[in-house]
Length: 363
Image 1 (cartoon, one colour):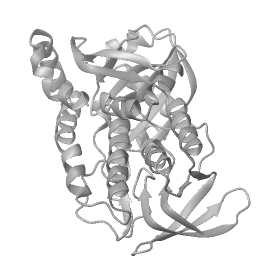
Image 2 (spheres, one colour; image 1 turned 90 degrees about the vertical axis):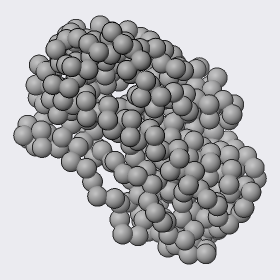
Image 3 (cartoon, one colour; image 1 turned 120 degrees about the vertical axis):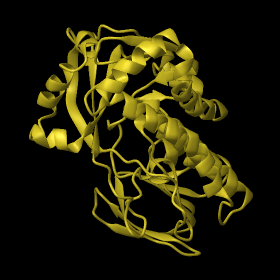
């Protein structure tokens, strides 16, 4: 089996690349191992960077039709109870991964991409004509797919030779709530001890609650995420108030939290996208936007040169660099009660002090 472009992963990065290339007439095969709709760990805030990509794809109005919530400000809440507010430079959008990923993968199929789902890529062979071994998860049959180029959008670089970058010591966990006593136009960040939480409204009158938590704390609670979260609520009075009358919808989900820069080299014929290319601290809400923009950059390069995007690593470094530093610094402040309690009054009286994180969120 042959494809002009083989894409591994049907999330925002893989689907955006498939849409652009299929619309341009390329033979695109996309491999996605999960059945949709499916939920996953994510802050579920789409930055202006990602919204711009959807505008160029003529998919922004369909996103609004699925209930995306307009977010115009950010609220930072220290463990002391002190809060600071700032207007976002450009709106962000609260939308579940179930809704966004379904919208994008459907658009890729409509554009003409061949979608193999559920199917798992079991190995990649780099080279001038890269190939993948793909297992159909319904029939258990195996197919070898050759291509001109492979776009790896698996979210973790697990299929690259040498394996993924070393894991961090943090986990991302999330769940949804309803009846939250909080604003429907704001991204809220809550400082905790050694970690932080985010709360953002999404479609259907729900809120997404996502946290970055050290794996050691999860182990301390024997993997009981509900018990861990009950303890974390004791550390921030505003978060506790927001959720005092809320109802949890569904189970807690957990996933390793990646954090790494763009790598110096990639295997011949294989180009990572999104979190397979680089991963930043999720506190800035830029993950989905970066994934979609990275896919757009690679697709544009491929349409100019059928064999390989040129200079794409440099463009990726520029895309991730400033956001990576700002988001990491903000996460370290939010995760330290001492620094968060000092920073919140300053930010409240001097909103310009929030500019580094806001620049990272503006797209």
